[in-house]
Length: 260
Image 1 (cartoon, one colour):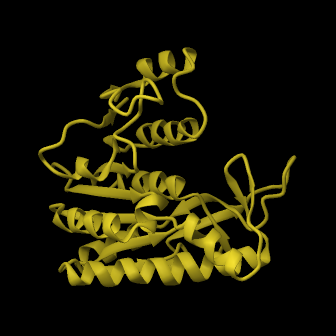
Image 2: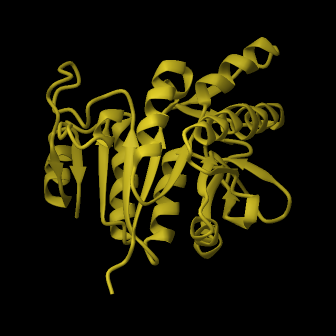
Image 3: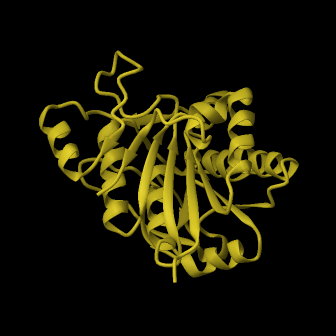
């Protein structure tokens, strides 16, 4: 029997920061037919609120160092401010959303990242997704909205990369559903030339990916994103789409499709 389809959609911080972009995205998200899950971060908002409170945000290679004070801010901003606003807006669009961290329904357990050259603090690497618990919420008619917080199973919350949460949740759900990931960000897709917004690579498979890596076309922030993508595809996700929010419409086909 064919599996039911499930869309797992992740939005980047730039969409969250801009009220008009967020409203436009949520309208498109609420129009997606069938079962769906939303994942969001909120790093830019967290940085802004932290600085208002006199807490300096420390970044190493684009990744946040999460000390105890920063974790409090992240919990307030991701799990409270951003998550509840998104959930409320979705209710206004007739999407019965339920806001979650990984601690809710014990849905995502992480290990605290081990200290190597850098101590990232209270940062989690996803270990286990309780996909059957998440499926119960979906089957009950709810749309889960995950923020980028997980827990270790012993009472400790952990700041966790939202792209990784997206791919790991999608891998878990793919044992029950035919799962597609949509990574929505401000670019039109993966670009052949970073200075040319129109140079979208429309299809990437494992061979093309290797070629793009060898040529140095995929670099910097795109590297971990695409590593995540291929981990997810190897874990059972059907396909991954990457581009701006208009890829959620039928009309736009100018985005990057990633398959094995």
